[in-house]
Length: 323
Image 1: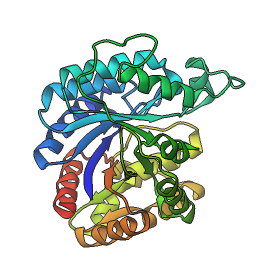
Image 2: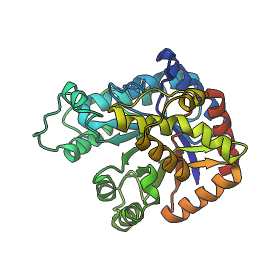
Image 3: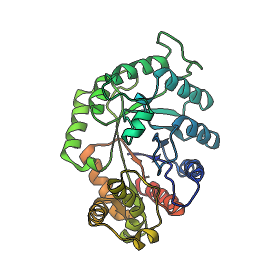
Image 4: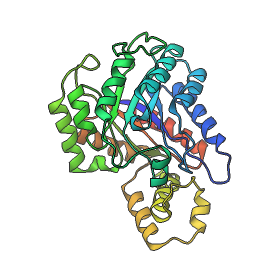
């Protein structure tokens, strides 16, 4: 199984948000040194806990500091953009860093209603995602009504995030699919991935189905330490359900000092029990089980922790484990 990283430029409480972006760049450099397959960054708008709203800009910075590792988006949310603009951005990246650019495409409309309004989304608008995706693919290969510049040298691989009908669309268009989160352990996810493989139609981009699974994976010397490292991200998710926004990461000490509402405690304890977090042996067993369930071709770890040094060590341990 190939191994990659998805970095969401998570912010830390009390620290400048610019540190989240420079941290993403440094993590990409580290991932290349470790031999990871690819390094992807995310697109989130007006989310307090995430600094990256423009994958193309961040990828340009990462490309300038790396030499070999593939870099891409996980993903560009196509409903937020015109296909021509996305094509121009990624063709420019391809021209700057030939043969290293991936384009992951999603369809999320925004984290909250105010964000969706700021992005000019009309709740009653027609769903044009598939038509926009086809236009984008034509623009990337120079087969559209207008020519996007710079003209491509080599194809830019396009992948679809498996949200909503993502697996069905990916199968019909012959594209790789990226499925993520705790849902991967469910029968529904297994059925959706199975249907993707069954219904897959080969394309110029891809001859056979290709499945990437993405989830947080935290590796430490022992299970207790790994769960502590996983706590800040899980805490942020639990708090988002309580306060309605996704907050910056807090230190473990700060989290432990706070009063936990019963529902927050319930969510945290359940998530920690289900997390892919532990010693190398424990994590290896969980990855093996998930690989068997999904038949995944690639694991893309989307891990975040408050402690950056511990995050880098987790990346190293995961590389040693899967490699």
